[in-house]
Amino acid sequence: MAESKTPIIEIRQVSKVFKLQDQTINALHDANITIRKGEFVCLIGASGCGKSTLLRIIAGFEQPTSGEALMWGTPIAGPDPTRGMVFQDYALFPWLSVRDNIGFGPASRGLARSVVKETVDKFVELVGLTKFANAYPHQLSGGMKQRVAIARVLANDAEIVLMDEPFGALDAMTRERLQDELLDIWQRTGLTVVFVTHSIEEAIFLADRVVVMTPGPGRIESDNPLILPRPRDVASPEFNDIRRELGAKLHSHHAKKAA
Amino acid sequence: MAMVETGAPPASVPVARPAGKSPWERLKPAALALIVPALLLAFWQVATTQRWTRLIPTPYEVGEYMIDFAWGGIYDDAFSGTLVTHLLASMGRVYGGFALAALFALPLGLMIGRIPTARMVLDPFLQVMRPIPVTAWLPLSMILFGLGPRSAFALVCLGAFYPILLNTIFGVRSVDPKLFEAASMLGCQGNAQFYKVVLPAALPSIFTGLRLGLGLAWFVIVVGEMTGVPQGLGAVIMDGRTLSRTELVICGMIIIGIAGYISDRIVVMIGNRLLAWSPTHHG
Ligand SMILES: Nc1ncnc2c1ncn2[C@@H]1O[C@H](COP(=O)(O)OP(=O)(O)OP(=O)(O)O)[C@@H](O)[C@H]1O
Ligand SMILES: [Mg+2]
Image (cartoon, rainbow over all chains, first blue to last red; front, top):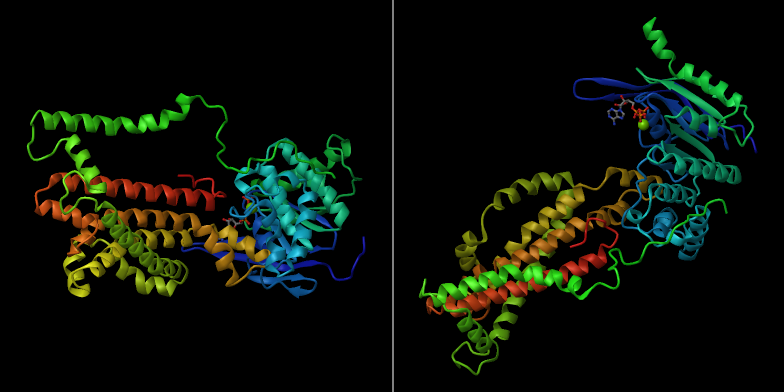
């Protein structure tokens, strides 16, 4: 993988404070991460530790209260097609067919009809939905909807894909299959992926690096490079060692509080 | 290819009718729908032949009169064979008033739903005007638009206006915020979102508003035609009342009912076609 000097994403001392009527919430406190092109980074942590907030700042949906979020060295000003988001609840356009959902980005960018069609054909096939190309989202299963959501950001030439618990609502079997498929696409395309999950297993199965976050206020507890060969075996002793180690880190704030 | 989805593609028709239904299965909906009208008709027959009332004609008399009203040749009075004329006159007012209402209500609804300033300026005023029934507007309408068809038109328009307006506002305001985020991260930002997200997302509500509006246009046609128009089903009913021709009144009522029903079925069919993507929109 080609290593460039500037990282694709840099998060420098980013804090995010939400002000509600009677309270302020420190959703994210002093977060630092650097993501290089082609990396697969997982964010894990307990509910409310700021995973979604961090992802939404990278996407450009939220602005940091302090600190900087950079892409290729320039501040992230707002949502942009180079950073595609895959939502947990899909957020497909219900009035568009599978084809038109996937073609939404290319069409919005004003590409020629023939180019849009070609792109759509390619990505419909990539995610294995050729037979369902003309179906509407309500006619699809959850796993198929999430495939469409992935295809529509890939079809839009996203350089980095941000996924917020994308497989959280799926059954275990569909989830495993989509994990395999996602890894397959990632390895073939050299995409950069930031993936939020609640599951330690999912994170270890997918990631080059697992970023552990802890709540109250949301902080980055540790950044853990994984040196496990792929494809990874969930049942191997190495996998289990890492699982135990990360599990301990994940719960470290409980221990600190108890002390 | 790594990804292959098994299973059959969905049928292009969202609610496919299973083939090979028995004749009874096919007729059942119609049969069930006819129970209540049949009972009512029987009660009407008994009530009139038993002379519980002398003011209401028997179903047979009304049926006979309906035929005369439609084609003439039985009584040959002023109303014989005039049904089509009156029906067309009323339809013109219903659809014309409805179209005019849609012309005002759709842009207004989109504006109020999307632009906070427009909402603050217009919403309070429109909410105060809303409880005033069409019947209350009748005298003013006759002063403003004169006796005759223009007044009728205005009143029908008023009747259809609010359901279209309110449902449009509702549709525009209840777009899932996630869809705006999805559109903007795909490169569709600013005003383009209005056409590519807001309008299609609001379409089911807008359509419901149009359907209710058209229903109300039929509903208020009699009031609209109290303004002294010579033709129209409402005018026929008013004439029937002054002339104590109850059979005429009942004929007018039945025709309004049937015309409004057919009109609604057509709208629903169009809706099912246009909104095939919406799982909740099958009438
Ligand atoms: N728009 C918002 N307004 C107010 N508070 C918010 C907003 N978004 C997030 N928060 C708060 O910020 C904190 C972090 O939220 P965030 O959604 O980032 O957590 P998370 O790690 O993604 O949790 P989960 O695993 O449950 O999705 C929470 O306390 C949440 O209530
Ligand atoms: Mg979250």
